[in-house]
Image: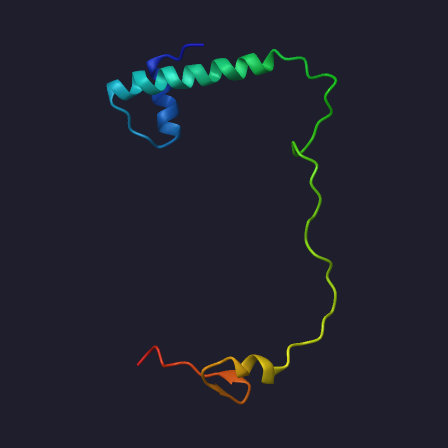
Length: 95
């Protein structure tokens, strides 16, 4: 399927691209090759293939949501260079 220069300009306009004459020929042939491949895929018999939303059968891989013991503030504040009343103390960033 060969695209005309007008069709290539129309596609470029839709994509908000500005092509020069050399680019129109270059990208026009590339778009035509892509459309040829898509047409080949359309010729395949897919009547025995069930529709799917994903190519791979994946399930949710998140961990189980289980309640855990909360962290002890004394433990996590012991690793801080400076802590005050259960909060980290950091140097002032803004004046």
